[in-house]
Structure formats: structure tokens, C-alpha cells
Length: 212
Image (cartoon, rainbow, N blue to C red; front, top):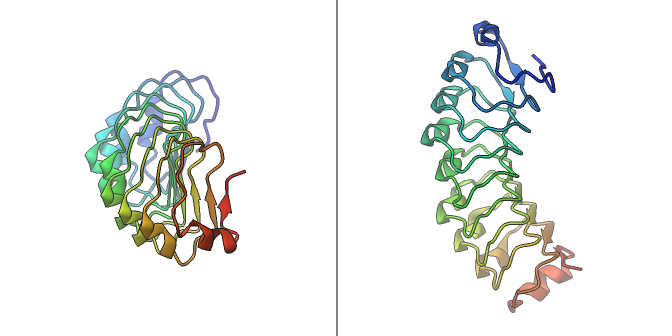
């Protein structure tokens, strides 16, 4: 069901009665809340709540354990996510960019099937060590946050191809990143504060680094 940009203001009750829905797009509708009834849409694989005015999302999102393709929460006013979302272990794509996160939502670290994670344009000052548990992750986008350092556990992301760190006030990088076997692009543009580690030249020689 595609209800993109319909100026709804609130979600019609009839939507929650569509138990067979596999895709639901509610983006760009000036929504300030979403009913807990969304947890009844057990067959959802794709959910787009982006470009709204949400300050929180329902606990019942964690009941959508069939959510596999994407969960799009980009461009809202979120500062946290319910711990219940850790149950979304089959989810492959999550976008929580352009919100008001100051702390990384640890429930995300439970989404162990994640392939692509976007958390750009927030206010994060750190990433938890638990992020290393996202061992299927191929892309990590944390552009334009307030990250000064990164956890050593990033070295556990053996499938990672791209890491976007643009616009963060980083002062160092963990040594564990030197041994990421599949890394193709480490984007460090607009990072003016970084002290380059000894191993940096190895990745630069592989053509992985972008910083100009």
C-alpha cells in the first residue's frame, strides 16, 4: 500500500485492518504518531515512515518479525528507539538518518541480519562496542555526526564494504580496521582532525581511502 505524500496528518484506521499487507509506505504525511495497531500487520516486509514528524515509534514495531526488506525512519524527530526492535533479526536495511539521536540506539545491535545501516546527520558522539555484532553488515553510513573515536569492534565487521565517516571530528581510528578483508571504500572527506595511523598507508595503497 502506497500512501506517500497524501497529507494524511494521521493514519486512517482502515490501514490497520489490512492484515495481508506486505509493503506500507506512509512517508511524507506530516505524521506525529503511529498507532500500536501497526504491530498487527504481521506480513509486512517493507515499512516506510520517513519524512514525518515522529518523536517516537510504537513498541509494537518489534512484533513485525517478518520485516526483512527495509525499515525507513529517515527525517523525523526521533531521539530513541524501543528496545523491542532488537527482535527484527531478519531486517536487512535500516535508515534512521536525519533525526535527533545523541546516543546510538542499542536495539539496532540486535538486528543481526542487517546488511546496510544509515545513521547519518544525527548527533552521535560514539558507537557502542556491540555494533561489532552486526557481522553481515556491508555498508555503514554515519556521516555528519559528532564522532571523535570508533570502537575496536568495527574490526569484527568482516563483510563490510563501505564506511562513510564524512564530517565527523574524528581524532583517531581503531587499529582493528586495518584488517577488514572486504573494505572497498572508507570515506573520510571533511574530517579535518584525524591523526593518520601507521596502517593507513596500507588501505590507501589498496585504493580504499577517500579523504580529498
